[in-house]
Image (cartoon, rainbow, N blue to C red; front, side, top):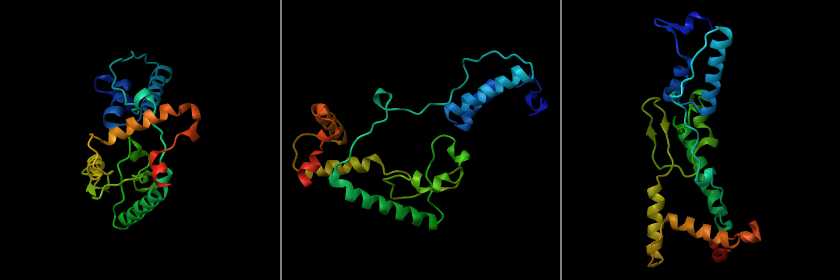
Length: 204
């Protein structure tokens, strides 16, 4: 990189603000922005001999959000749904293959991965387990994408199931989360083998 490319009409360009632009326009990961910022500061200080002030107001790239307790939630699935879920995933794979044959098959990638891996958005590993029923066209790239199934679909299905079971008390998707947490707390001292889904007791 030449020193000419680093100058502007008003003097030296600001590498810290350039790193901020990576977050605003480039949507890069926080680690990528930090690496770029460190490299730029090293270039100016050690190679060009220009000491730059530190900017506390630089726009920082967002770090991935985590769930409660700063941990991603890992849970278990009932053994009773294993066969049905396997069949569903295979159906989603077949749908993805059909999308590819028709020039679609894209999904939105997190952060700046689309630029880093231009074709990754069509790979099976990035597809949703529960894909939406309809495709949409992303206006910037023109890609025909499929998003995940909207949460309202699951909420409506749970509501219908509660009504069909003639359960008088209100029950939602969040009810299952609290029920599992309560059950897990009660059997925690038994180890993983002690945690059994009520569905398995009913259907297995």
